[in-house]
Length: 162
Image 1 (cartoon, rainbow, N blue to C red):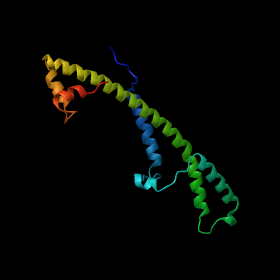
Image 2 (cartoon, one colour):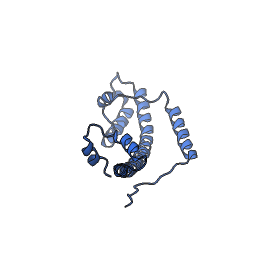
Image 3 (tube, rainbow, N blue to C red):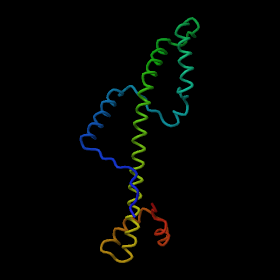
């Protein structure tokens, strides 16, 4: 019985080089302009997206046309630059997130295909090693190391069933 192939995608060397060149160009533009926070640091900051975005834009517009109401300790020029850059990045982040999610989903399906099919290969090796098929025992023993700590009989039963 053939296993279902969830996805079939192939990239040419030229396509991979094109992707890498595009990533290089993106990295070049973003160099010294993006900040990388730790997970802990990210938790310390609120996200301005979706509903909050509407409020931020409305509040910014009020502040921009009512400078006399702005506290003196706020640098309006810096706030304006932050607002502009934030709005410039948003659609590009959305675009990259969509592309990244597609790559992640495709890679997930590719990994599932690999694991399912190689799990079938592994189970076939297990059976072949029981009949002393040439080379099967050595390969099975090598691959079996992925499932340590399991008693021998249970390891055979708990090996990847895809």
